[in-house]
Image (tube, rainbow, N blue to C red):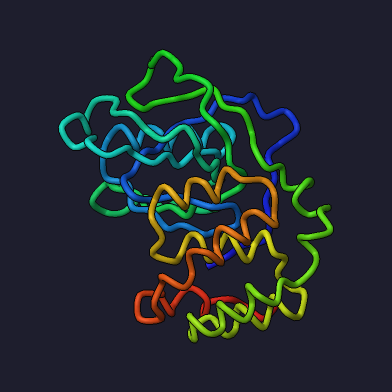
Length: 225
């Protein structure tokens, strides 16, 4: 699923809560449902809800398994997300919906004072910069044709793109999130700010992605409204 673009507040402090997971890279505009059952992340969610609604999804690096319950290393590139909905279940766990807002780079982790991790970050690829790029407003037919060929289930997504209801940045973001690409490549796509370079990176990866591997559900969930 994909949501309308959200933006960070002008008074964003540069500090974020970190929610590290393995093999998951969030992208701006992507809607991510999450189930929270660990107490430290329940505390993190409550802190976010009481404050700025922000949680940054971080990607655990290989070899984290032996140190999962401590502070295992994470990739330096994260995606700041905004909590748009949450509920407490009867069992005491939480369901939440997080929408990707902007990528950021971790400058350093903040000395912990709570059970969850926090970091000071530098925001990357500002939404306003991406939307003003001329290359972002032009339909890349190579990208559209290749997606249509390799991922038949994404027909609706391609139509929205060709009709101008989805710009190139959003097109790349939603494809990069849903396709079974290597985690390292997803992180590179998240960090890269140049639209044309991101398209080249994604197009170069698409031929190796078979239609059978591509998840059909997310593109078909797009709303025409």
